[in-house]
Every structure is written in C-alpha cells, then in structure tokens.
Amino acid sequence: MNKNIALFFLCLLSASLGTAQDQDLKNFTSMQMKGVKQIDIEVDLDGAAERLSKAIQFKTISNQDRNDFDTAAFNAYHEFIVAAYPNVHKTLKRELIGDPRPYSLLYTWEGSDPDLEPALFYAHQDVVPVPADSRDQWKEDPFSGAIKDGYIWGRGSLDDKNQIHAILEAAEMRIKEGWQPKRTLYFVFGQDEEVGGAEGAKKVADVLEARGIERFAYVMDESAPLTPGIFPGIKDNTALIGIAQKGFISLQLSIDGIGGHSSMPPEESNIGILATAITKLEDAQFPYQIHPAVRHQYRYMGPELDVEKQPLYAAVAFGKDEEITPLEEEFIEVMSTNEVTRAMLHTTIATTMFNAGVKDNVLPATATAVVNFRPMPGDSPEVIIEHVKKAIGDDRIEIKDISASTPATNIANPDSEGYKMLEKTIRQIWGNDLIVSPFFVIGGSDSKHFQARDFAPDVFTITAIQLENTEEFKGFHGVNERILKKEYAKSIGFFYQIMGNLQGNL
Ligand SMILES: [Zn+2]
Image (cartoon, rainbow, N blue to C red; front, side, top):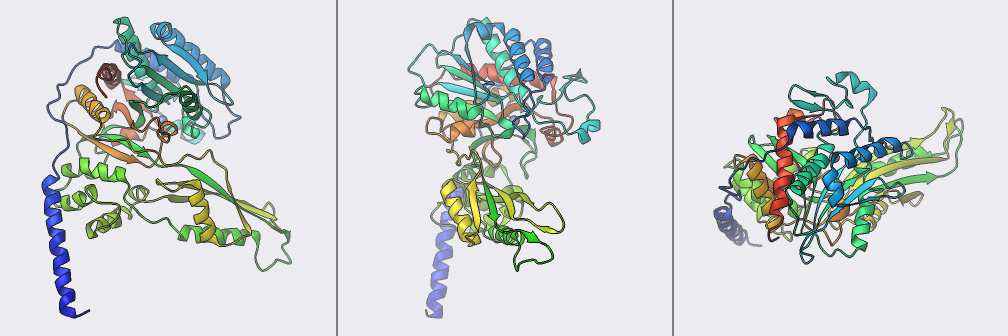
C-alpha cells in the first residue's frame, strides 16, 4: 500500500474513533437512582441479637471431608430455628432436602396471587472451620456468640447466619402484622455452600425445577456487603450487586505407568511427564474477553470514577463483543496486571493438587494432579477438556472430570425491574449517599445452582449488611468475624422492606 494512502486511512480511522467516543461520552451519565426516601423500620433488636447469638453457637461446620459432618449440630440448630420463630412455622411450609443428607431447609410462603412469579431468598447454614493456629487471634470465642462492645461475635455472624436470621426475623414481623405475600416467597437455607453446594442447593434447585416453576421473578443470595472503599478507586460507601457468576470444574490429570527402582531410572519419570503437562497447560491460558457483566459494571460504576478515565470506561461499557477497540485493549491490559481483575477476563486455570511418590528410592507408578477451572460463559466442560488435551499433547495423560461442575451462570439484567426494586430497597434502608453498581462475581455462592438454569435468569447477590470499613471484611472466613448490632437491625429492616416491595410489578 502507498504510504500516503496508508496515512489517510489511519487519519480516517482515528477520526471515526473520535466521533464514536464523543457520542459514547455524552451518553456516559450517572446511573445512580436519586431521591429515594429513607425509612426507619423498628425491630426487636435485643431479641433478634440474642437469637443470632444462639444460632452462632451451633457448630454447623462444613469440612472438605464430607464424612466429617456434625449431624447433631445441624439437628439442634433446626430445632432452635423452629422454636425461635413460631409464627413462621405456623404459616410457612417447611421441608428438609439434600442428598445424601437432607439438611437444607426449604420454606414456602404461599402467595395470594398464583399468577405472579415467585421470589426466592437464599442463605446458608454452614460455616467454615476455625483453624487451630488462628484461634488465639480471636478476641472472643468464635462459637460463643458473645454480644459485646456493640457487636455480635463469631463464625457465621457475617457469613451467613446473619442473613438466615434477618430473613426469618422479617418474616416473623410481617406475619404478626397479618401481612401476606402476593407472590409466593421461598426461603432456602443450604447446608454445604462452603464446599460447593452439591448436596444442598443443587438438590433444592432440582426439586423446585421438578415442581414446574417456570421463572423466578427475583432471587437473592449473599455476596459482598455494603462497604466504603470495597471497589478500588472508589472511596465512597458502595453496594455491589452480583449479576453473574463464573462456573466451576475440576479435572484430574493422571499418568499410570511403570514404576521402578531409582537406581535405574527411565529417560522420563511419571512425575516429570505430569509436571511437563502442567507446565504446558499453564502456558496455554484461555484468551481474554470482556464479559457482558463487566460491561454492565463499568456502565454503572464508570461515571462515578476518575474523570480522566471516562473514555476508557465508556469504551468498555458500550463495547461490542465482535470487535475490540484500542481503548478496550488498554482496559484488558490494565485488568490483566492484577490477579483479582485478571480472573474477570478469562477462564482461569489453577493447579491445586499434585501427588506422587512415597519413598526416596522408588519411582512411583502413578502421578496425579488436580486442576481447578473457573469458566467464562461458553467454556463448557467439553470445551475445557479439549483445550487441556490440545495444550498438553500427550496421550499418556488421562483426564477426568472429578467435580460436581457448574457452568457459568446466566447474567441478571441490571435494567430490569428486579434490579431497580433492589436498589430502591437498599437506598430506603441505607440512604442515597452510596454508590450502587452491578458486578461480575469471580468467586461464586450457592445461588449459582439456580442461576445456571433457565428458571432463574435474574439472580442478584449482595450481603445485606453495612460494614464500617474493608478491615471488617476480613472476618469473612478469617478471624474476629463479627457484626455491628445496630447494623444487624438495618439488615432485618432491609428484608422486611424488600418483602413489601416484592408485592409490586416485576
Ligand atoms: Zn457465605
């Protein structure tokens, strides 16, 4: 091509780019809901705090070894719930579901209008263990449920018994007032969220699907709590609403060959062959892409961020999947420098286990590794297995899916009535001095078992509690998990209010 013509084309290209950006920037205005009136909901806080404190004392721990399950703790917790919320148990249908152990609770609160699509609130009963070596860092016993210095202390006070009990407190209040839902409300309290939800949430989703529910108008589950500064670059108080979750699959890679004596080693050992395969796989990363949930996130959050970066965020928010613009490339480049944001860009590959050998002078006959993937939409188990096979190019390695895998979920619509109703409720309880934005969840919670199915496209995940700062966030799975008593009252108020707001059109 003639040099001048090439230059001409370049100018044309940048000119058209410039126009597109100007247009995008003009449309890149704040998406924050304004003027919502804050309301104060009175709750029996001392009673509610006592009940949450008691709930924390049941050691409903999820261990990786599923044979290590404390049946007595779960039974006692269930008995306590029945006794503590008498009106709920007079009014709602209660079922125990789960396989092989039926310890997940499914409550059905029949709506007065059978034509309305139902809504579902999800929370989990199980908690993560407290490692013995972290025990002395706790200021209060992690299973004491101590109420002290304005906090309720212990495992499950943030993750996630606070949500179970806020939902039950709100329902109890509503029933006492003679209130009845128009649309049927389901409460689902899972038993094994911390180990993937294969026994509990997945089975409850199967049951509800088999009962013929076509679509849930609204599903809510835990995720990030309201926290100032939770999103890098925003100091303000922020409520992040999860709208999509990545999938989950673990593959076992193994080689079954001939062992032998270490004095006469073959050219390649089984450990060497498997290690090479893992290295090749880690070198064959999945390509980066901008997930639609990330586009939504920047559409809502972008206008609240740095002014200089607005063109960049606008390009992401309004970008098309078929073409990647230079600005989007820049965005991907920045995102890929940090492991948290990089995980939002592609199906991740994490080698989590590697086992071989028992003695220093024996060549092991087998070697196995486990690789955990968190897939983006479209990367089904078949696609991933094909990718692995091609990357390692070694037929001696056997590949097996060893997980209760889940695909990447549907993407909830932030322009929907459900999202707006949730944002309104958040502002009714916590006011307008905060940023509300959708976001893409790279971890995942039990609601993925619902959101991956056709009947629950609009699942919104947020833990409805206000934290003082990001330091308190470390209580999730960490030490000194605790909840501010006065904020727990607001959490109950939130669920009370949202039950009322769900009476509207969704
Ligand atoms: Zn949780």
